[in-house]
Image (cartoon, rainbow, N blue to C red; front, side):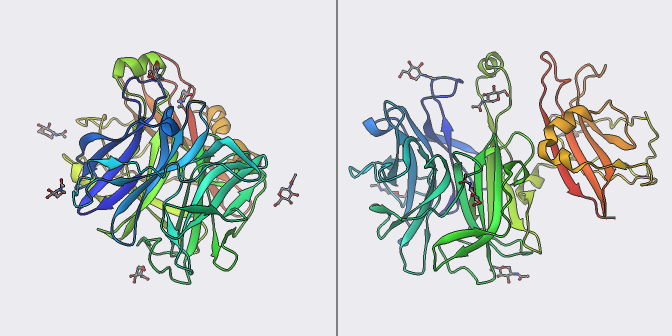
Length: 438
Ligand SMILES: *[C@@H]1O[C@H](CO)[C@@H](O)[C@H](O)[C@H]1NC(C)=O
Ligand SMILES: *[C@@H]1O[C@H](CO)[C@@H](O)[C@H](O)[C@H]1NC(C)=O
Ligand SMILES: *[C@@H]1O[C@H](CO)[C@@H](O)[C@H](O)[C@H]1NC(C)=O
Ligand SMILES: *[C@@H]1O[C@H](CO)[C@@H](O)[C@H](O)[C@H]1NC(C)=O
Ligand SMILES: *[C@@H]1O[C@H](CO)[C@@H](O)[C@H](O)[C@H]1NC(C)=O
Ligand SMILES: *[C@@H]1O[C@H](CO)[C@@H](O)[C@H](O)[C@H]1NC(C)=O
């Protein structure tokens, strides 16, 4: 539940106050004036009612027409059946929004009606208004055994009715979590406020969380049919576009009225063992907030960490014109790699040695990264960066690249290999394919 309100950025996030083990979720709450320095406040939503006895699960914040924010979240009851619930600030003049009230009308949306599964019904989106002036939200669900972003409508944001068709559904998976729906103008880095007038040229993006990653589709929102219509439908969900190829899940975006941009925020499961989590005292981190927009032909999202993060830059180190031959390593000294911001440009001497690209690798980039690991020689690559390295290199993380020749263009594989993070050997890999612009 990210939000900009009265000069402050708010992040409401899933938190178990009693343990590092997932469960007993509440809505913890932190605020910031600059997206870099954060102040933790008291919890916004605790498990106080029968309908949220097993947890106050994920949801969204919407600023209503009168300027008041409202939280919609999923309450899980004692058998983990799910319903959508609402909460309002006790004092909406308080820019910190410290205290929230759950009205007696809760839960406001139950998993009633044909095709629904009571324990697969969660994560309401931020609301938007349609041409009829009514509010709409989408809810992630299993519908007749397949995945759907269900559509609900309301006059007053409190009393909701289900629209007879979903915003979008697909039979290539069975459930979507944390749907996110927003508009964007191709090639324009400004964000759009979904509850304001959306220009006709705008495209819409539907993001969904499944298979431990965040995927999305770009398309149009057909106002007449009240449906999202993706530009391209690929049945094989392994080929759907992804927000990120690393540990990144349950992301949420919001419109930042202060700077007129859309910001997306995701959760990174650090993939630590539960004993490591217990020793650290936490489990999971928020990835950096990123500005997100559509590329100029409106086919995919582009993103970059918010500019505020640059305020953390200190002690710049600059090297240029370094020539690296196979096996060479250049050490950058005097940098604290626990927090470094690296801009790096590689210029291959020749592209002739690039190996041929096999399109079947796209079906499982993690697997290909594992096979083409940093120590496996290739035609053009691997080359890259070694970070978080101990002096003897016993512990290190390689971020490496390989260039392949495909029919009409070159493709780059980018991987990060976390296996040399001791004491445990972890097999976590990420892969990302990009078109190389040459
Ligand atoms: C949740 O809270 C109950 C007590 O209310 C406790 O018994 C249980 O261990 C907790 N579970 C987790 C995962 O923290
Ligand atoms: C509401 O918040 C405003 C701004 O912080 C404060 O001045 C006011 O006293 C608060 N009202 C109540 C009833 O707490
Ligand atoms: C799944 O959806 C696709 C495209 O919408 C459709 O062509 C296909 O018949 C559907 N398959 C099943 C089993 O419903
Ligand atoms: C980008 O969109 C914003 C908001 O709609 C608009 O004010 C601005 O003029 C657009 N910029 C360009 C270059 O089209
Ligand atoms: C986080 O990652 C670990 C290790 O990969 C996995 O065992 C665990 O199930 C994940 N936790 C959640 C809540 O997804
Ligand atoms: C920057 O360099 C100064 C002087 O060497 C040092 O005291 C400081 O800790 C460095 N800051 C960071 C963030 O590395």
